[in-house]
Image (tube, rainbow, N blue to C red):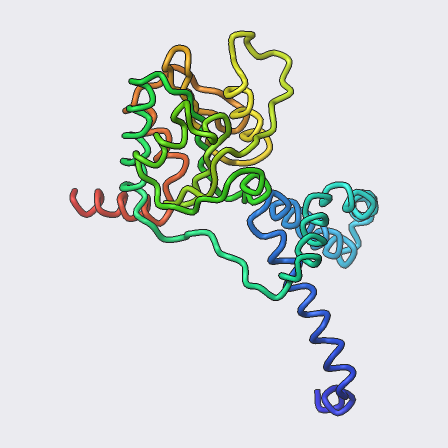
Length: 269
C-alpha cells in the first residue's frame, strides 16, 4: 500500500479524479430511466462471467462470454436515448448541476385518496384520463416529452389537467411518489396485434408503457367512463373505485409501509 501511495503523483490523482467523475455522472444520467434496469442486468452477467471463469465452468463461461460480446455491440443501440441526453446535457453546460432524486418517503394513503377522488370526478363527468404511477423503473425520458409540473398530487390538479379544454388533456400525467412530475406526456403504444378493436389510443398507450416498464397506468374512458388499469402488459377493465384502490395499494405502496401494516395487524392479534 505504501508503495502504491508513493508512486502516485498529481497526474495520477487527476486521472483518477476525472475517471471517478465520469463514472459518477454516467450513473446520474441513467438513474431514473429504463436503462438503469438494463445496467443492473449487464452487471449480473459480468459477475456471472467472472465467477464461471474462476470456477472453470467452461461451457457456462463460453455462453456468457458470447452474450457479453453481443452486449458490447448492442450498447450504443440500447442506450441511444441516454447517450443523446448526455450529449444534450453537455451541450447545455449543465453537467455540473445536481440531479433531483425521486421522492422516497411520502404519505402514500393521502396520495391515493386524492387520486381516487380525481378518478371519481373524471368518471362522473366522462372525462378521459391517462395517469401513470412510476415504480422502480424510472420514466425520466417519458417525463421529458411533456410539460414539467412537479406539484403535489391533488384531485383538483389531476381533474384540471384532463379537463377537455386543457392543452394537456390528450397526454399522460406522470406521478412519482406524491408529486405530479409532468403532464401532456407521450407514451409508447403497444404493438400487441391481439387487442380488441374497441380499445382506443389511451388504452394502447397504457399497455405500451406497462410493457416497457414496471409502471402502473390508470385509464378513464371518455366514452363510457369505465376505469381500467394496465400493469405488466395486461389490462384489467371495468374496475370500481374500491377495486382500483386495492390494486394500486398492492402494486405501488412502498414495502416499508406494507410491512408496518402487517406488523400492526400481528400485534393487534
